[in-house]
Length: 126
Image (cartoon, rainbow, N blue to C red):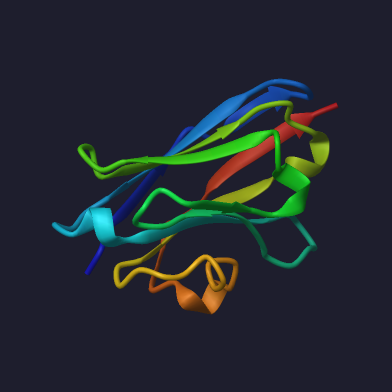
């Protein structure tokens, strides 16, 4: 069982920045495939970004150049630095983990992940 604790959401004006954190339990954290999904009201859940065991990353097109996903294996924590935020980034952001790892070709698929965080609200005002 992997426990996930998210933090860092909040309210920010357009153009601002936020950093989300996701702390995960488990002794094999460095092997985990980890990522973020988001869901806005009335919309389908959407893949945002992922990072795999070797540090390789993958982003959805709408956040490329603005968001950066990273991990600190010494702290069992993953981060999502979000810059140049737009109102359309408003959503509940959920941290996801696949302890068995994943390839970059599959990290955008929600069903790949075994564990989901409770979600943290990000609201970007115009």
